[in-house]
Image (cartoon, rainbow, N blue to C red; front, top):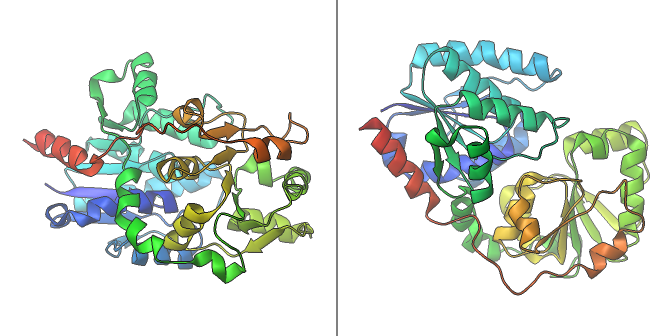
Length: 352
C-alpha cells in the first residue's frame, strides 16, 4: 500500500507527525509539501522538531490569491500523483492545500482520506469553510474528530463514509509534551509562569484592515498584564506596511517553533486567539481560551466552558470579559484518545 500525504501549512505538519512514528506506514509513503506556508525557515523548523522525514516533493507554491494558488497546486499535484500513483491520498484540515489534494485525487480516481472532516463554522465568508465542505464531499473516507462534526456530516448525507476517530492533535501533543515541559521559553521574554497572556492573530477580518487590528490591540492592552504576541507573517506585514504602533503591554516577537509555542501555551495565564487549531490545543492542555471570532468550528470547547467566544466588533470593553472568564472544574475528553491507532486500523481494513 502506497500513501501520499499532501501538506502545506503548520497545522498539517503537526497532524502528520504521529503517522511518521508508524514505521510500517513510512515504508511506502511519499510526502508532498505544497509550500503554502510561505515562511520556509519556520516550515523546516516544524519538520525538524517533529521528526518528520524530509518531503519527497517541495512545490514552493505560496503566492497569489486563493484561485491562483489552488490552481497552481492542482497542476503540480496532478503531475506528482500521476507519476507516483499512490493507493491513497491523505489530506488534513481546511487549507488550499487540502482542497487541491482532494480535487486531484477525485479527478484521478485515487481514494482520498480527509482527516479532520466535518468541521463547520457556518460562515462561508471564511475560505476555510468552503475548502472543508468541498473536501468532505469529494473525499472517499472522512476521519472525524468529534461528535458534533459527525452530526454535521450526517446532515449532509455523508455518514456512510464517515468514521469517528477522535482528533489526531491529541496524539501530536502527547508526542511533544514531555520535552516541552522541560523548557522555560517564557523566560526568554522576561516573563514568569502563569503571569502573561499569549496572543495569536491571523484571520483576514481581524488583521487585513489595519483599523481592526489597531482596535483589537488597543483593547487587549487594557488587560494590564504582559501579552506575548508571536506575530504571524500575514499580521506582521499589515503592522509594518501601516506603521502600526504596538501598545506597551504587548510584546511582539517573531514566530516560534512548535515546541516553544506549546511551552508558552502551557505556561500562560490565558490564550487569546482567532485560530481554530490553537483553540483545540488549549483545550487539550486544559488552558483557558478566548477566541476573537463570532463563531467556531470547535463548538464543544465553548459548550464545555473552556473557550469564550468574543466578537471584537460587537462587544465593548471586552477586556473585562477576558479578565473574568474562568472555566469549570470538569474537563471532558471531547477529542478522544489513541487516535492514530484507530486511523491506521481503518486504513488497513480498507486495504484488506
